[in-house]
Length: 159
Image 1 (tube, one colour):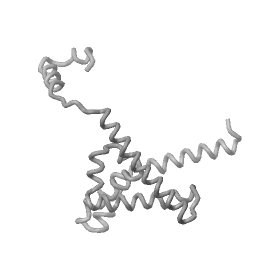
Image 2 (tube, rainbow, N blue to C red):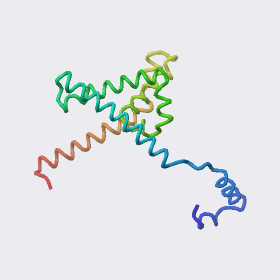
Image 3 (cartoon, rainbow, N blue to C red):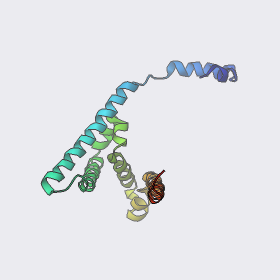
Image 4 (cartoon, rainbow, N blue to C red):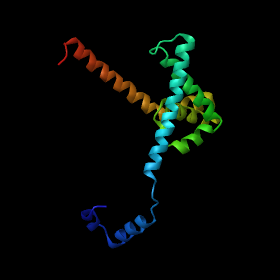
């Protein structure tokens, strides 16, 4: 805490700040970053392997193999989340599992599993996109804004 902010604290608050600082656990930031990098990289490597499989075995192009690759990754996450395996992977990899599309799939699937006892419509359907809804909303809105900007630039010959 900066010294000028510390001056505004009462002696009891300053004592508590010192107490808290002494007992705060040190987080292994570098170790966590390496774990996240390796976990996210492994997920991306698996995705690349799946995409290569689709390209060579089903005559997809690089552009058209993306959709079935993402669908396959989300299906694998569905299975791993259902069996509780993805949660253990996420505990190890941290943010490395949240950034790829698998993290989004896990968020949706976990919400669906958590609320399944409330029924299919009100439980699963109503709560499945609570967490992911904001991601979908802002992702769609951002894509819309970028498309409008691109259209304006393209129509007027660029700047």
